Amino acid sequence: MSEHTQPTDQPTQPVAGTRLSRRHALTGVAGIGIGVPLLAACGGDESAVDPQAATTQTPATPEAPAAGETAEPAASFASTSDVPVGGGAVFPDEGLVVTQPSDGEFLGFSITCPHQGCPVDRVTEEGIVCPCHGSVFDLASGAPTAGPAQSPLGAVQLRIQGTDISRA
Image 1 (cartoon, rainbow, N blue to C red):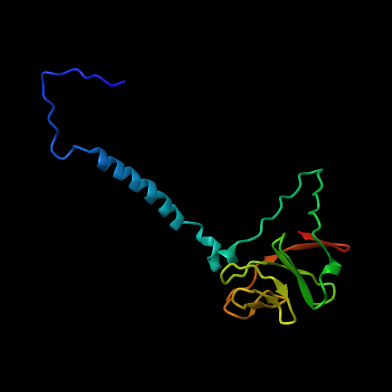
Image 2 (cartoon, rainbow, N blue to C red):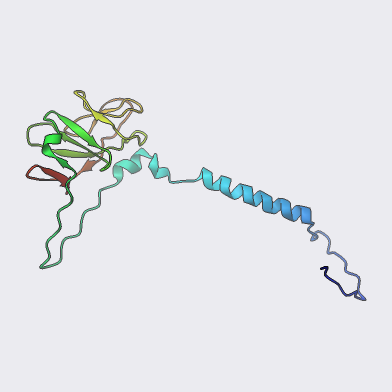
């Protein structure tokens, strides 16, 4: 079906500079369709690679229970026997590395290296090791001892109940 138009007595005159052809309209729409996703891909969350952002974030603290309520303990993710004295263990699912610098002293650190956000993946005699650029961190403080990292690993509070290790 075609659309019928009624002839008018007045000829239509385009206003100078305001006529938009179909080609120009489609070109503009196509440009926007391509440009917007490209701009979105260029943006992003810069804190993911910002070493300062990684070191200034503090872990969330649970709210205190209301009067008459008891706080539920956090779920245990490891046993004290999983963490050797003078060493440590990485728990990727928890985002944590737990060390035991001396007998009975358990410390928690974020697995996120402050240099460029890579996860540390092992604990050796030298310390906590980041595989991406070779940074090594002290077992007792999380401070860098080798490599390009300039900031310590983020501290994470732990709760030790008997032989169970959980987040505080």
